[in-house]
Amino acid sequence: MNTITTTNFTFPGQKSVYHGKVREVYNINDEELVMIATDRLSAFDVVMPKGIPYKGQILNQIATKMMAATQDIVPNWLTATPDPNVAVGHLCEPFKVEMVIRGYMSGHAAREYKAGKRTLCGVTMPEGMKENDQFPEPIITPATKAEMGDHDEDISREDILKRGIVSEADYVVLEDYTRKLFNRGTEIAASRGLILVDTKYEFGKTKDGKIVLIDEIHTPDSSRYFYADGYAERQAKNEPQKQLSKEFVRQWLIANNFQGLKGQTVPFMSDAYIETVSERYIELYENITGETFVKGNVSDIQKRIETNVLAYLN
Image (cartoon, rainbow, N blue to C red; front, side):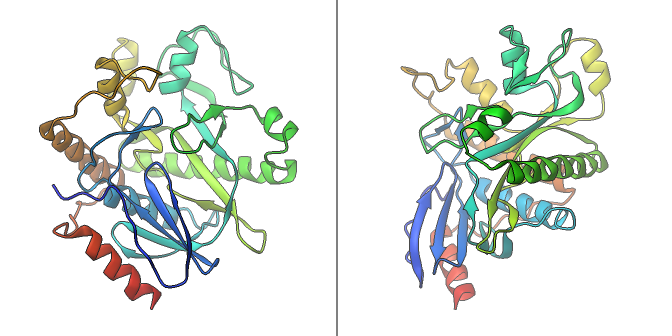
């Protein structure tokens, strides 16, 4: 399958390019950012050796739809989507924290809880909970933003303020926006028969000092979803929840003795397995958006993206 795993474009007015775990961000004239969602797959903060067909398009189009569905409550950076894999928006100075919010005790929170911890990022988790139980109230558990190849690290609100990573005035806004977005995301998910379990948001400041939502929102890479139908029954029987997120990839890696730890090597992913991951991402898209996924032309995906971005910039 023709996937896009790296780009090396030179656009008019290009000042720099940043290669993230999954996205590549081109700075145009210190005014605009051209963000290309690649087909790279990252799990446990490690980029997998092979790309996943259509994954970049899926993430970009979900994020675009979700930004449109939340722009009335939280401003965002987005101005255009000239290609299925591309978003264009205002140049922002990113905050160096990811705002993680959890409605349920799943994933990382559940692993910490099982290890006996009852505090996560300075937030107390109640006794007597089991994996995938709903928290009494959603909890915000921030993480520091890692460079490629490093692990994001849990951090408390107190440490963020003490270390001056974010000012208190700005942090109050980030918390407020995080809760508003999670509430809206929960409503959108419910309308699709889904539960928004947890997610992360990233924010930046525009040149005029406005705090806006940046990067992706409510995608299967940044969020965890459960199917609402049967949730209560599965919890009552201590059965795993049926979920929509890239957790299925993490579980496959764990089963193959990989969690991104020192000395571990990424297990071989066959073309057949890659195809099943692509199909799962398409399923995620259709469930999350309620729309049929339309595959972009990938016969020459590099050329397609370059042509569309140049047409937009010109």
